[in-house]
Image (cartoon, rainbow, N blue to C red; front, side, top):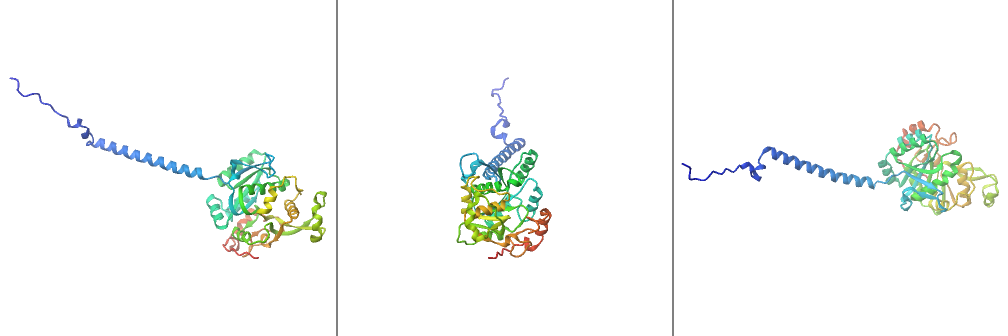
Length: 345
């Protein structure tokens, strides 16, 4: 006989939604999904942070284009950086060329830091910013080598002027215009890439109180006066300096105060006479502008001492003789590489 009871209904526990999470395989799957989501979230956040940091770092190397407008002050900076002049006590432009890769290497192995962090620390401790100053060339392979060096060290200012020794006075004027546009500085220093420099002592020298805001600072010498109709402004100086010589700084390193550089920036390139020698050219302009000549022999020391600021092999060479090896030798001397910052008056 048929049973009077109804059909039995069986409920499969595994079909319950809650029971699914009791299976070990499902638990493992959910755990992995959660971990994966957490990892992806962390990656997204870290990418955002690193991206922001990278975007906030502006390149130190800047290309400068000159004489593109009628503006007598000079030219245009890539990236419109002239609107953001960097404040420092002193800016040091290290003049270099395409054949000076070895010199730059020696500088970066001795008194000049080779990385962004080192340059930043040096600037913070001394108030001085440093960049290599170089023009351009039609030789593409040389430009390619330079671009690789720029990408590695990022410590250049690239001028839109042909890099030739005969055009050094033009490069010097372009340098001061570029430096003034980029840096709000109390002094602008021109230095060669074959001298050993003590940045801490140079900083103390530049920081001294001066009564005259128009200062031309260097290791002074006397050189021949070149007579020319364009140089009639020399005549009043002849009674003070003699008829054969005038005072000007040695070329390997000298500094101009901000007021002097501001006057140079306002000049058009054909305003003053260009001589074949850059140091003579600058010296002639300084006489024309009636600036104060400040002589400091520590800027042309022939050996490292407790007071030397710039060391080079005067008078045998215009800088260090065999600078690539001589720079490394000097750096081993405590008087050169030590932290003493004594500056004589």
